[in-house]
Length: 578
Image 1 (cartoon, rainbow, N blue to C red):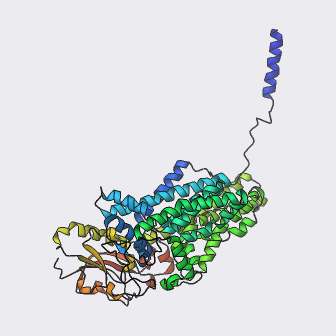
Image 2: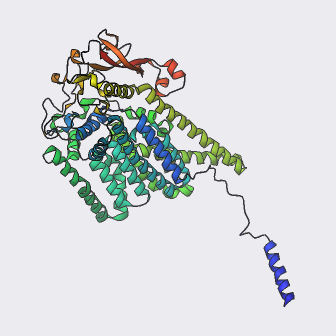
Image 3: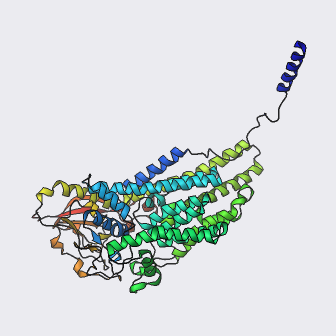
């Protein structure tokens, strides 16, 4: 028995020593890639830091954000603020339901925080948190569906692009719609079509009705995959969930039945009431091409060519061809539709910003893989081919990151002066408030009215923002009525952008004045007047007298040398009795 045991042992040892093809470690097949796996914690932290930086340093780039959202929110919190014609019960094309979360947060904070600027930035940060979770959920959906390479590029583009930096903390409905459309796309990637429909409905009904353009292909996919009953059922459920509460809240404020989402559609599409969005400016068809390139640089170029690139997919990615064509088509539908609309605003594209990043990532992945395949025909060393692939990816992505950071920094350095001025003014007025009389203090703006960041930057109601005459000849906002401010039809309001002389105060009535002084301006030079003295001033880009490259992108040392700057100033009247 002992001999038999030894024979078996020698036999087994021999088997173990033989080369086993199942256990043999072959060199891994070159996948032409760098490490694609980004840990969940890193993704969340990066997006959080992006949102925090945006909350702190993002300029208010659109006066609609101030007057249609920050001002009525300030009114709901503090009982005073400026009202636009859109909130007049006569027109009612804005919903108070969208303002409620921010107003509730602000009201709670006002009980423990006296500084209104802090409340402003905290609300901004909360908006950014919504963006963080929507972008992260979308990224993980992309990773699960398409793998690490496309996901990594999507993550980098979302993280560094100027467009996302601008939109993630913007207090406008199209940014809110961007959050929920991004969530909808995340649901779509996971084939959770019901949740996708709900998210698109939320983006459309509570946010911005034209967000539906991005959701068209999603709805058609749900219809094809789940059937008519399923799709219609979730559509009806969404209307009950979102439209009904919106109508109830707006009825409370307007004191009448209002369907704001329908009112804004009829105004913009059917020109109801004689008004038209074209009254507020008309831009050429290529406006969005230029604007999107500035905000996304090469990412946008890659996104523009994504449709034909997807059509050429083969190999492992061929099975995703149909899905990808549908998925990115929302970007094309929305972009082409709004390019044909005469009145254009940067915020109108917010809803497709994440799609631009994704489409750009798909194109870059395909281009790099095709390039590597061609190199592989001539270079037989797979490791070297992989190195070339990684180097090419790093070069392209590095250029995109540098251009994106340069543009984002440029916006703050060149156009951040208004935020600095109003922050300084808040501190000046707060610290010297005891020296003022009981009368109202007029803080005046003329041609710079549209850069006023809101009453959150004026410490008390006695410090009143007032308008003096400039070359602007349109309708300006006016204070909410002290009694029933949301339901009373204000005087001097119209939806035709007609100027109202009663909105102005005389220059002699102004105690402080915020103005931009440029060398070639045709407006009055208050900065050089002997009636005013400068209290604070910051440089502000004189775009007309600065080279295109240096004003679009910030290039250390060179931008300061090449660009021309005006004076953004806080002026105080010399003979001030206060």
